[in-house]
Length: 143
Picture 1: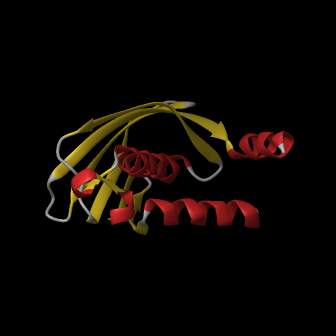
Picture 2: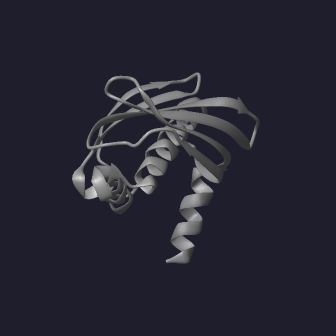
């Protein structure tokens, strides 16, 4: 990973409010802790759905990386989010896991909980695995 790519990943993590990666497991599980801030909210202090989608997408991608290794890049083909309760400012936990995996496609699921363990949202995603070297070469060619 180049210095520019690392800085970009740091910027993304900061924008999403990532506090820390709590767990990654080679069986295909990941848990990430985020801090939902007021600047992420709309009316009444409710976190905007795009942040929730980003948190869950990241957790599911981390689960795929934990299972497949860093030489493969997870690319979302489909993402579905179901919202059950509003997320409010404070700590939230995004969990992702690989439900089924093939050579080039993974089916993942995830959930977002608050600090008391209440489920705020659930997600599912179809993820394509692309060799990291190809993704990086394509990015260089595009610039």
